[in-house]
Length: 205
Image (tube, rainbow, N blue to C red):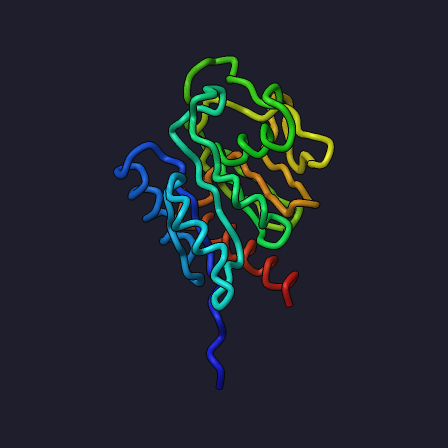
């Protein structure tokens, strides 16, 4: 019997140092159990290029991580532009900083702003996700200073509250953005990523 192929995911790490990268890598590994994870730093253009162009073992999805950089600081690193050349062929999940970058990259800089409090907030928030896939109400962790308040014309604000957007989706480009960190808690991480991978598998079958 032919062994079922496990999905292959490129995770682009946007953090500023190795210690933060290692902490987040461990959380991704604990939360995404049934996939092959390929970690690359945002500045590793050659490594990212090779994975994107490996036609014998293709990627099933790309994750853009959160970051300790600030999206409102124009000197902060950019998400590698090469992935957007594949974005209608390879699904992209952008987390926190990644989502904010998407809102700017496919919209304008005024789509994001600093929180009124002016400092980084860490908090938990229970969410019931209904689109583009359905997940029961569960707890997710937020860790951010900047927020997305608007999206471009080709994007949809899937989930929002009074002052910010929690989830956005660029259907044409097949890019999903979430402001929270689904990888932070193992329980909610397994639920989120398991549902996400099942959704990708159903679409591709």
